Image 1 (spheres, rainbow, N blue to C red):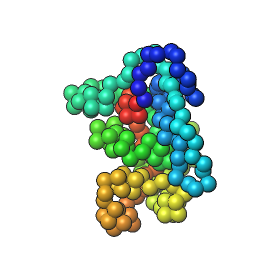
Image 2: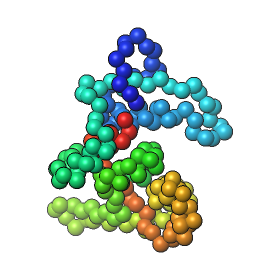
Image 3: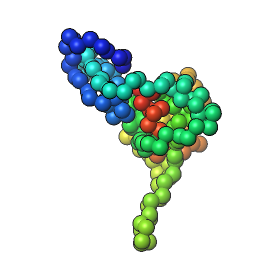
Image 4: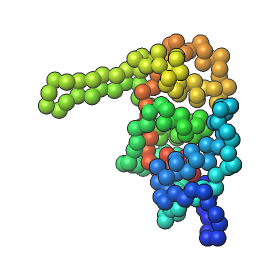
Length: 177
């Protein structure tokens, strides 16, 4: 995604707003030309314009350096499911993880503020869904991009699947731009 100043161009899709949702949508549309399945007919690449009134976000490296100087983390954050995180791709996930802007969680508890009802989820509850392919194995996604497939198979039975991750707004936008 790059900044455009010309106005005389044709676009298939124009997205107004380059925040987290607009940026991710643009990235998905740009990467959606071939899903690898034989039943999906390859279409021509989409020309996507992303309109944003603010200047482009700082690089993820700049954000990582600012986090080392103890700046306050971005107050806006998103809780993303494993499937949503997988759409970002392994390189984006790795950059967010390396800059400590991706908070992985493998358990969650929800309760009523004025009653006895509670729900408690742990990653082990998802083992069968991951094994059957109904849920994305984020550990495997990150490790396969690092070439650690042998270790991945050995460790697969010992690790708890992720329920999701909390990602700060600014690093997420920077990572997908």
